[in-house]
Amino acid sequence: MRTSFSLKIFYYTVLIILFLGIIIPLLWLVFLTFKTPQEFYLNPLSLPASPNFNNYFSGAKQSNIMQAFKNSFILTLGEIILTMLISVPAAFALARFDFKINSFLFSAFSLGVIIPPFTAIYPVFVVIKSLGLVNTHLGVIIPNSAFMISTSLILMVGHFKTFPKELEEAAFMDGANIWRLLLQIFIPISVPVLATCATFQFLGGWNDFVFPYILLNKNSYKPLTVVMSLFRGQYGTDYPGMAATVVMAIVPVLIAYCLLQKYVVDGMTAGAVKG
Amino acid sequence: MQRFIKHPKLTLIILLSPAIIFFTVFVFATFVYNVFLSFFNWKGVGALDFAGLSNWQKLLGDSDYMLSLKNTTIIFVGIFFVMLPLAFFIGTILAKKIKGMDFFKFVFFAPIVVSSVMIGLIWNFILDPGNGLLNSVLRKIGLDFLALEWIGGRVLSPYSIAFICIWQWLGINIVIFMTGIKAIPASIFESAIIDGAKDRHTAIFITLPLVKESIISSAILNVAGVFKVYDLIVTLTSGGPGYSSCTAAMYMMIKMFDSGLFGYGSAISTSILIITSILSILLLIYNKKTETYEL
Image (cartoon, rainbow over all chains, first blue to last red; front, side):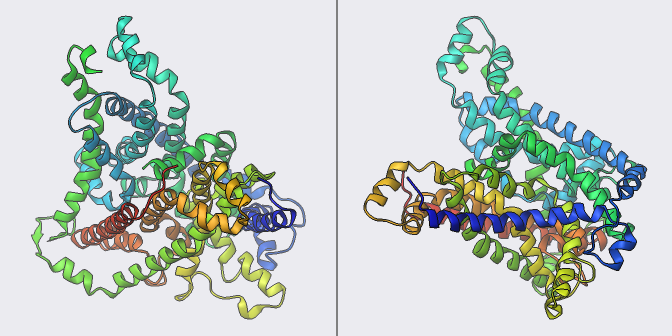
């Protein structure tokens, strides 16, 4: 199917306008970071007299930013591990076992996709408090993982179902038990889907705000999102300083996106397409 | 599967119980608890004080809550009547075999991977009425009268929020449509083109009906998304001035954690879940009632 030349011009024009719309806010953000606050207030649009990296240095020096990075990392890693530990066995059971409430359970888990986590925040707070986990990383990891089960299951069950029955039969004939079947056959052949799940969980964990915002009130435990949300008051109107910190905070995610593009796109759209 | 295993029931329980326990405690039980708490007055300490339907009555007469629903509706309208058609249009373009489409897809998708907290801060730098990019440029080119109070004022903030949501979510919706469109066999388009159909005809009469499932699922995703808008506002306007730029989610969080009205907050939270569920169910019913074409 060929697209005519004039139509191609039209399509490219639309795409380039949209491209500029997406990219200009991000370029402006980077542009700001090279200006001194004085330059910014005299004329926001002027080119910086000389490229100035001080905003990055002073941002990095704030000890709470480095601590926040570390906290985000711990929370995200914990959430990926816990969600995997919970979801993989459950997905295996839902995909490969025949039992009465199988499809009911799967539908129930899938419903989780439409429940906004913030509606659960107070009850979650009550549970976490009664477990004595307020102001601990584990206290955020547990509820957040629970909310990640839905999408992970939707992705994994769909995938586990695609393998033929002969695969399990052959494994059992060869004397494998159920645990070896899961650990040495299903998990290794499902690495791409598990990677998609892990990427989805990484983004969910790294970008999560509501749970750590309410469940962690000691500064030394707060992740980047929470620390950054307090910036508007803290920095006042030092926009260049604030912009430099925003750049530092989003670079890891953007790098991950560049490297793992396929997994990121699959993971983020999975809940929608297969749900 | 079961016939190969010694203790099938026990194995099943071991495999499933962690997921069931976590999901029940943190997802389903929270809903039940919210409904329960919405019938009480509670300030976080002391005994529960039964309030009957008073929280719900208060909710229906609460003009700030209605305002937050109105703001949520503005975002909803922007997403459904501006973003979805635009995403469908761009999706049809990106699904074509023209050079550079992967690059555009890569860039358009990027905003959704960045946390809404950061997106809120980034758009501050652009929409700030004083030193933001938008107004600076408008003043520079002599359009001072257009340099409005995009955020921070009482009028325009909800519209700016809707615009930012469109900016952030457009890419993921484009990809959902694109995936659906790519699944349509090329032969269908080819025969239409042989019959003399133009691109715009095939888009409306072939692609649109065939990707209905993608449209419904992305619509459901967006309903949930609209009611989740909270982090973005925290760093963009904090819901202010007053409650003027609150969404339903923001209003609930303020009532619960700033005012400490847990019973009332639970009523708001339950109402949000009810509205989201009704809208999702309506979309699913619509999906069932209308014709679906098997590919």
